Amino acid sequence: LGNYKTIGYDEQPRIKTYTYEGIDARWQATHGDVTFGTRVWKEYPISTQTISSGMAIDYRELESGNFDGSMAEEMSQVQIDMENKAVAYVLDVVHNAIKNNNEYVKFYSQYTSSPTQAGVDTMVKNMRRLGGKVSIFGDYSTLSVISDWNGYKTVGTDNIPFYTEGQVNEIAQTGLNGWYKGSALIELPNTYNLTKPLADKTAFETYYDTDKLYFTVAGENSPLNIFRRGGITTLSGNDVKTGTVVTRFDMEIGADVVKGREYEIGMIEKE
Image 1 (cartoon, helix red, strand yellow):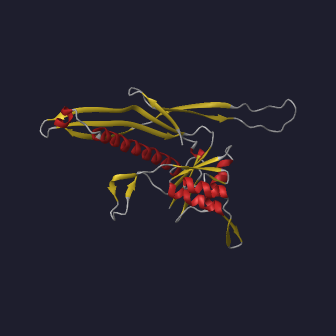
Image 2 (cartoon, helix red, strand yellow):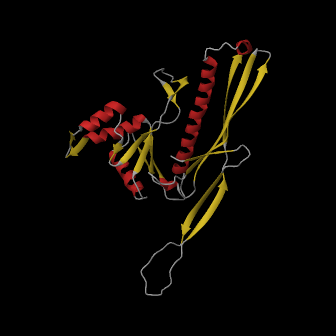
Image 3 (cartoon, one colour):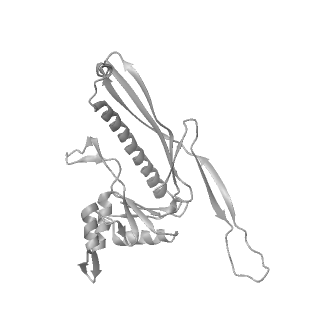
């Protein structure tokens, strides 16, 4: 979805972009005046957010050196949880930048219960005019709705099935058709947060919303910029009172959709 960059802890994340002005070819008489296009550069800083977590281990277990891999697994799970929440934060930045954009052009729409074919087709049509084939990103549950449209043709009021052998095999192997009318369907893995079961215990919360679709033009320079500042840093210490060794993890993440280029990411979401 965007451009990713790792910077040092002593660096400030900054967005550098440009716009074209004065590009206006026109019919005119010989030796008439012409307009001359220029690029206008703009640079501005963005803020970062800190995601923190921690783990604790009994000091006697640590000093024994006899590990069965559980400590490494716990440390890995802590970092995976942080990474997943960083992705959720970036998607929130994209969502807010597009939905709340009232100053520039934007491609944004909503649906009531599930995505409609007319709504997706309109968004794809708008995005293709930016210069290329479109990629559609979303949760598996939402992309599967689009994938199902590949197997039917509406004739009058009837839906006539016409699955090909290739479509059947692809769905059997991956769960989705990878394409819809020339647009690539790309799943954003959305894992369960196993520490947060739903109130009715039917499943767990996911890390981000399942009801959003994002549309980008393949091969174009994305307006979304993601910065990771200083990597994951750690600090360890001993809690003598409880007899545990505690380790703190911190990660700074920053993201921004370039002002004035919000239209380069289309979005459809549930009302």
